[in-house]
Length: 114
Image (cartoon, rainbow, N blue to C red; front, side):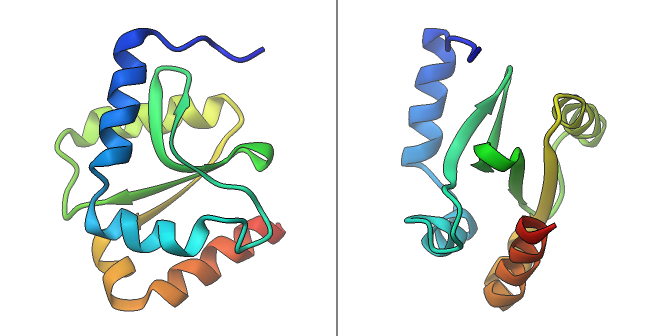
């Protein structure tokens, strides 16, 4: 059963969707409209966390990060909790998306096939 979003989280989702980073926009352009044969959502809640992109049916989360996480320990714990809920997480740096988005998409495709 899906967890009901509280108003604060719903507002945060709206904000994040309206203010995607340049790297998120570039990757979203390649993921949306079932281009890889899988439906992706952007800024999707997984319990109390929000992942950048999610193939919900396959429980695959994709994160696009800046140069360094602000709170690396919290990021590790967040990733562990999401994984404990049955999700696989693929993480890419912004620079990877900017330099070779095709290689990023290929890695995602390989995960989708496994």
